[in-house]
Length: 273
Image (tube, rainbow, N blue to C red):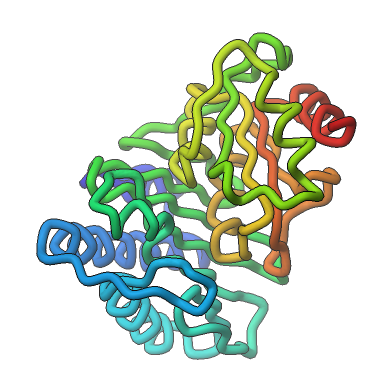
């Protein structure tokens, strides 16, 4: 799999603290990629959580190994993962982990799942990876270094006109009564709409293929944090539906756009809806 390792290693002479963290994050992504593909191709065993969401052995085994590596290398860092909750750290850094984002698709034998890895400093995401194992591609982003896809830096389209935009709409089942009107309003906007793209849609936004992405109320911080650097370091904007910045504490509906002007238009539509 092609990763962002070459770009991040050569961007500057010497290794910064964030470079060290990125190298570890890329290692975690490789582990998840190999493990999840093996399990996906095998005899998938699916169970269900109390909230009805899917759970597979891949979710559990990958996050277990990730946590072991992070505790060994960065014992003072916090860890927040989808499957095993939060371990409070003693430093400003917290890793935010979702080994299988899109378990619903993964458990159904579909292709559209990803592994999400983020690192927050003082609650703000500064590192993000969206890894697509079955596509053998990866989006990697680090504060101040840009977003890398398939070994090269990528950028959003810079689109400013909502009517001319490609709009990615998250899982229709995720919108609660409070967000349904906004969902319907934005679902009729743009020149083209794609549905239920999941986290890979935010990667596509970072390389100029989608202009606006929205997701509904069912997101947690481990679904959100990795997306932020990937979008922002490519020149995009991402926030909640009120325009507030996303942090380690964020949950619920989000929207991302290829430019600030486009983001303001999307927020206006979501609000008016």
